[in-house]
Length: 263
Image (cartoon, rainbow, N blue to C red):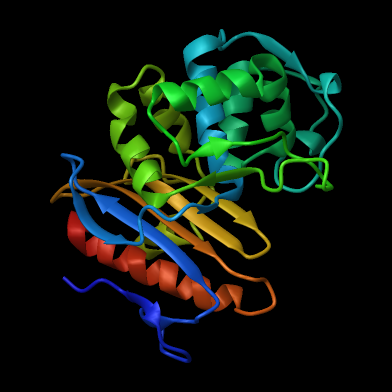
């Protein structure tokens, strides 16, 4: 089985090399946690909203799922999400978790962080042995020099291992259930040609992160042959490479995963 070539070769077709501007960290593990493919897996990169997985895990472990939460407790925040367009100010914890898992809802993220605190999320990461993977801050419309420079960071090695371990970690099975609702299948998961709004069969459970010069997709894929956990991270200076080229290479990686799991 042929994996995409992520070495530097300018103007190469998708999967046959990548632009020098793009930095990749990739790790794919089998059902036993063994690495079946990797490219610079220990490199620490910006992961945008993927760090919200740590928040979801802490929420699943520590908050009553029917606890009502009020969006007026935090400052409004724009970009990804649906809650800011809805009429209700109060939703239970589990509804907010689904909003974060499905559409990476920023307002729901900040309300849940208001409930549990960044310190508890950091303590959870440390208890899981994560040293490169962290959620650094709340979501902000404007990030200044006074704030953490990025929302989250991580390595493909740690993130793929975290996904592999979720079934046996407290709160992990619930997080995996929430991840079934992810509507962003634009990256690695695009290779499976699923309906982004109706794919709850469990073939793909993923979480993505998007920012200027950042595309990240991590998840678990189950097929007839095997289950794999994967993490694909791409960072680049925004003016020096195209999103289209990055997404084409991510789909090529997804194609290789699809073959691996027998889909």
